[in-house]
Figure 1 (cartoon, each protein chain N blue to C red):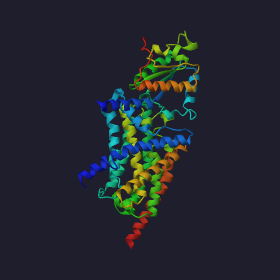
Figure 2 (cartoon, chains in turn blue, yellow):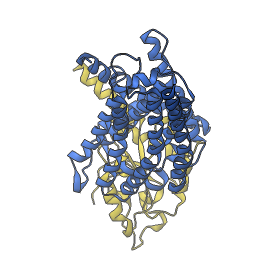
Figure 3 (cartoon, chains in turn purple, red):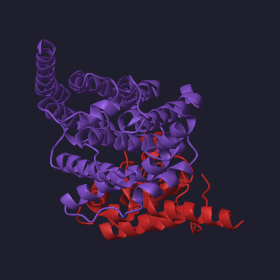
Figure 4 (cartoon, rainbow over the protein chains, first blue to last red):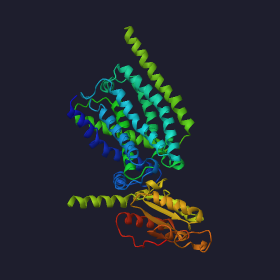
Length: 308
Length: 156
């Protein structure tokens, strides 16, 4: 893998140049669709962009025990982790993928949530700490089925290379794993039935309550990149990229990501927030049932292959 | 030079189009708060203008104050004002923050608001109607965007 390819993936596609406008577009679709479902007009097209510019030009207020490095560093780490996760996505099944990048991707996708937990506790605010605790609980809840689904996918493709997994033929394992992934997305993106860590009517904005100005802008952007990365991962695994042309692949990838955003928003706008034990139960019961079923199917087919 | 002007224009436009509100009750009778909540309902749909209600003063651009500032809430008001990042604008909702209204002369009142923090926009009424509130917030947004505030800085 050459340096040019790495830089291209990080800064052009599916990195910064693609992901940042896409993140704003997704955040706008989410807000607009939610507004339409509530019988409102909703914000104009450029709203997330203007929110970002406005926040960037505000002077952050220091929070006495920990101003400076930690307050800026945590959102920056979350942002860069989202970017690296994006760069690892096997959008066009080219030679960018390498053995073991699935593990790396799963790790990097989890970093923003980890940063949010640290930020919540480090801000020493009541709301931040409650939000961080909930985020940590939810992370344990959804990661169990999420990782099980990933293990099932890797084991059925017999590879830890994302490109191999994305190129593997569609089987029952794949369908079940994708369903598990879809179930985990709302919790990973803090969307409504599972929007516990940033429950605005209860604990304001949770871990980011004490952040202001440009630091908050970085958090918002990191959240947007999470949207792009997670819908992109699902898109990569759900559609076999066989259009031939690179541009076709990109269009398919972006289109499928946007369809996922619409689905997630409809689910979020149509549901109310669950309590922490209820949300954890959804993942440990139904999420795990799906994940384990996928894993069992993958193992059975592997054993069959060995016997033959 | 040209690019600097463009950037300044962009910043000004983005400040005008995304005023985030923080609402603080400093001992109001709840009438203005009810009207304020009504103005944030789907019927008026203020999100069209980028207006959002946020839970933390650190996220907010506009401080919407109701109530005549009682002695008990004064410290909270000062603290919350200090926690807001520049540029910030204060909107006095209703008669109470402007003049203390029926509470004027009470020994437990530290108000009116302009004796404690500088006020940029007054929205009179007891309570003011949601349309007036939205008008006041729009005025606050244009002050954020760089229009001069007509109110004077106040002595304490």
